[in-house]
Amino acid sequence: MKKILYVASECTPFFKSGGLADVIGSLPQYLNNTKKCEVRVILPLYKQLKEQYREQLQEVMIYDTEVGWRRQYTGIYEMDHEGVHYYFVDNEYYFNRESLYGYIDDGERFIYFSNAVIEFIYRGDFKPDVLHGHDWQAAAAVAICNIKKPVEGIKTVFTIHNILYQGWLMHSAFEELFNLDRIHFAGFEWGGMLNLMKAGIFHADKITTVSPTYAEEIKTDYYGEGLQWMLNLRNPDVLGIVNGIDVDDYNPMKDTHLPVNFKTSIPKKRENKKALQQEMGLPVDAHIPMFSIITRMVEQKGLHLVMAILEEFVQQNVQVVVLGNGLYEFESFFNYLANKYPDKVHVTIGFDEGFSRRIYAASDFFVMPSLFEPCGLSQLIALQYKAVPIARETGGLKDTVIPFDIYNGVGTGLTFANYNAHELLDKLNEAVRIYQDPDHYKALIKNISKVNNSWAKSADRYLDIY
Image (cartoon, rainbow, N blue to C red; front, side, top):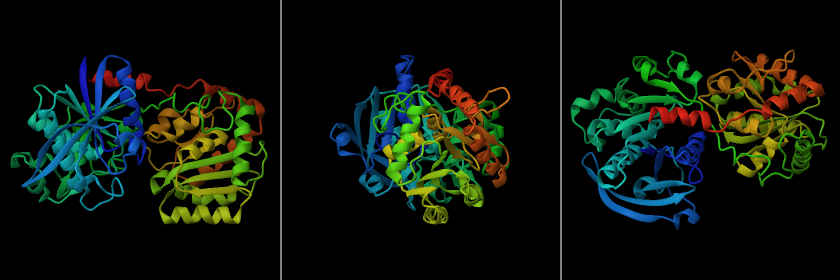
C-alpha cells in the first residue's frame, strides 16, 4: 500500500481561507476509504486551531530546523480525525498570528515549514512513498524533497490550485533561507527573483491542476501568469484532475442548517426560499426567482461584469442575495444596491457557513461569472442544493457545468463564453424565462439531480498517479 504525505497550508475543519482547505479536508478521507493507499497530512499549527482540536493533539517530537544560518524550534504534534492522520508543525514565531497569510515574511514562513517537513520525514516513523505538495506554500517542500531524497526512491506530486499566487522572494533569500548548494539556484530563480511556484513545477515528478481545462489554460500566455513556458516544457507530466466535494457533508437531505431538508423536491426547496426571504426581510413569495452570489469579492470572480449589469437586471421581478467580502470597490457596490433596492437585493458582508448553505438551498440560480476559475467548488455545492449555475466557460466551470439546451433538454446550467457583461445579462434573463416555464425548469432540475460531484472518479486518477 502506497504511503502518501500531503503538505498543505490549510485544511478543513481546522483552517480555511479558500477552496484549497476543502480539497485537503475531503480528498485524503476519500483516498483512505478506498484502502488502496494511506494518506497523511502535515499542516502548520496556526493560532486559529480551535480548542476542541487542540486538546486532542499529542506531541510527537521536538527538534531544530535549519533555515539558512538560523536554527528554529520545531514541535510536531499529531491527531486522528475522520480516518486521516494529521501532523501539525508548531512554531509560534511563524504561526502564532492573527491571519493565515498576508505577512511580509510569508515566503520565509513557508520555506521554514517546508524545511521542517523534510526534517520530519528524516526523523519520523512515517516514510512516504510520495510527497504531495499543494500550491506555492508547499512548493519548496516538493523541491527540497526531490533534491535531498529523505526517503530512498521517494516521488513528488505538485498540485497547482491557483497559479496567480506564486510565492516571490528576493534572490538573497536562497542563501538566507535554504540550506542547499548553489547549483540548485536556477531551479528556484525566475524573473529576477525566487519563485516558489516555479520551483515546485521544475522539481516535481508529476504536476496536477484542479481541472482539465485549467491545465490547458495555464499553458497559454493569457492564463499562465508568466509560468506557461515552464508548464509547456513539462507538458507530458501536467495533468488536470477536476476537484470533487464531500457529498455527505453537502447533502440537502441531511444538512442541519436548513429549515426544510429535501432531495429533488421543488416544493420543499421553495420552503427554504420562503424561510430565507423571511429571515432577510425580503418579500416572501416562492415564485420570485432568487439569484445568489457567494464569493470572495475579488476581480477573479467576475464581479466587474456583475457591476455593469446588475442594476438593470433587478428592474424586473427578481431577488438577488449576496454573501462574501473582499475589495472595497465590490463591497460598496453591493451595499449601494441593497440600500437602493431593499425589496430585491440583500447583501451580507462576511461569511458564515450555515448561512451560506441556507442561501444555496433557497436559491433558484447561482451566479459565477469568473474571469478565471481553476476549478471552483461553489458551483459544485450549488448543484448539490439544486441551485442552477450561471457560469462563464473557463477552467473548472467549463468542465463541470453543461450548457442547458431547451430543445433537447440536455444540460445542468447556463453558460457563456466571453468575458462580457451583456453575455452575462443575456443568461440571467434566459434563467428568468426558464424559471417561468415549469417544463423547462423541471427538466433542468432533473438533470442536475443526476450529477455526481463526489471524489470517486478523481480519486481514481490520483491513485493512478501514485
